[in-house]
Amino acid sequence: MTIGSVPVRFGITIDRARCMLCGRCVENCPYDVFRRDEDTIHVNSRKCVACHRCVAMCPRDAISIRQRPVDYRDHPVWTEEVREAIYNQARTGKIILAGMGNAKPYPVIFDRLVLDACQVTNPSIDPLREPMELRTYIGKKPKKLEFRYDNGDISLETTLSPNLELATPIMVGHMSYGAISLNAQKSIAMAVKETGTFMGTGEGGLHPSLYPYQDRMIVQVASGRFGVNIDYLERGAAIEIKIGQGAKPGIGGHLPGEKVCEDVSCTRMIPVGSDAISPAPHHDIYSIEDLKQLVRSLKEATSWQKPVFVKIAAVHNSAAIAAGIARSSADAVVIDGFRGGTGAAPRVFRDHVGIPVEAAVASVDAKLRSQGIRNEVSIIASGGIRESADVAKIIALGADAVYIGTAALVAMGCRVCGTCYRGLCPWGIATQRPDLVARLDPEVASKQVANLIHAWTLELSELMGAAGINSIESLRGNRDRLRGYLLDESTMRVLDVKPVGA
Image 1 (cartoon, one colour):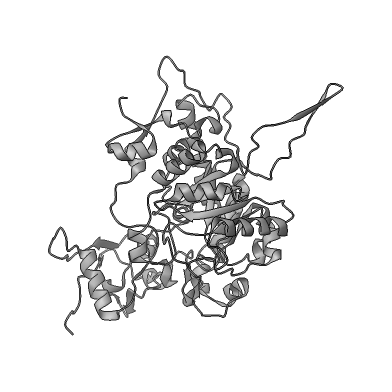
Image 2 (cartoon, one colour):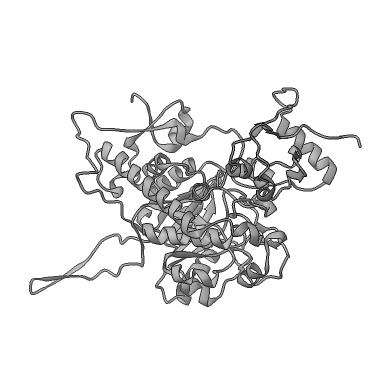
C-alpha cells in the first residue's frame, strides 16, 4: 500500500457521561458508523458522512461531530479536495460521483445583489392591509387581445394558449421516483396541492399512488424516455422536455442500480437493479427544427391542451438557445443553473461545468426582449434558489417563476451530506430501502414543505410591498429594483443592473 489511510473527514466523539446506551445511534445510522458491544458503543468515524441522523436521534445530546479533526497541511493549490480526488482515482481508476449541487466556493451573485425599498417620495405598500397579486401564469401570452362588440356585449376573440395558473411563483422542480423515495414524492405532491403550485415528476414515469395529484404534476420527457407513454403524458398538467441539467450539463442522467427496486423498475420500465443511464443527447434532436418537431408532436398527442416546457442547463450560449426554443412552439423555457442539485453526477461536471442561473436568466430575458419574443415563452429559473430573497432577485432579473429542489428536501429533513447516490439516505428521502423510506412520514413532511412555500410567499409579498409593488407582474424584469454590490463591471453589464449608489 503506497497511499495508505487519509485523514478522516469527520471525527465523532461520544460523551460517555451523557450516553445512556439506548442504541438509537446504532439503529439510525445506515452507514454502520456505530456498533454496540455489550456496554460500549464503538465508533468508526471513517464511515461518517455527517448526515446528522445520530445527532438528531440522540436523546441526551451525547454525540459530537467535528469536521477534519486531523487535516492535511495547508496548501493554496493542492487543497485537501484535490489531493483526495487524486488518491481516490489512483486507487479506483474511475470517475468520482457526487451528489447535491456545485460545491466550489464560487462567489454567489445573489449575495451581491441588493433589493430596493421605498422611502418618503414613493410610498411602500403594506401586504397585511392591501391586496398583493402573486398569481403567476406560465405559458405563451398573446401579442394583443382582440374583442368582439355585439349589442353592448364584449367577448374575447383571441384564442389563448393553455397556461398553468400558480398561486405563488414558487414550484418544486423535477426529482424522479428513484432519485428520491415515493414517500418524498408524495410529500411534495401533497404540499404543492395545498399551496396551489406545481411539481415535476422527474424522468422515469409517474407512480400510480401519485395519480390523485396528477393535476399538479409536470411530467418529464428526457433523453432516456423512461416511463414515457401516452397515459403518462395525458396525466400531467404540463409536459417538460429535459435537454440538460444544471448539475451536469452535456451529459445524461444516471440512476445507480442500487436505487432501482422492483417498484421503481415498474414505473421506469427498466430491469431491477440495473443502472438507468440516459444518453447525453436526445437521439431525435440535433437542431431547433428537431426540437420543434418533438414539441409539436407532444402537443398533438395531448390535443394541444397542455403547455410544453423545454429545460436546458445554463451554459455560455443559453440566450441564443432560448431564443430558438421560443420559436419552437414551446410555452416555457427552464434555465437550470450550475448550482442545481442532483442525486448523482460526476464531480468534475458538478463543480466545473455551466454558469450561474442569475447570469443565464438575465441574458435570456434580454435576448428575448431584444428580439420582441419575450411573450412567446415564460422563463422558469432553477438551480441554487435558497431563500425568498433569491426568488425576488431572479424574478427582477427576468424570470416568471422558480423551481426549488434542495430547499424542499431540506424542509423534509435533508442535511445536504451529498451522498444521495449511495441510496442510504437516513432521512428516507434519497433512498429506496424500505426501512429507511418508512422513516419519512408524508403527512408531516408535506406540511413542512408547504410551510416553506407559504413562508417564502409571505416574505416575497413583504419584499414587493417594501418596493412599492403590488403585483408580481410589476417585479418581473424590473432591474431598477436591484443594485449590484461588490460586483465587477462586466458582470453587472450582463445582469443589466446598476451599482449601489447609482
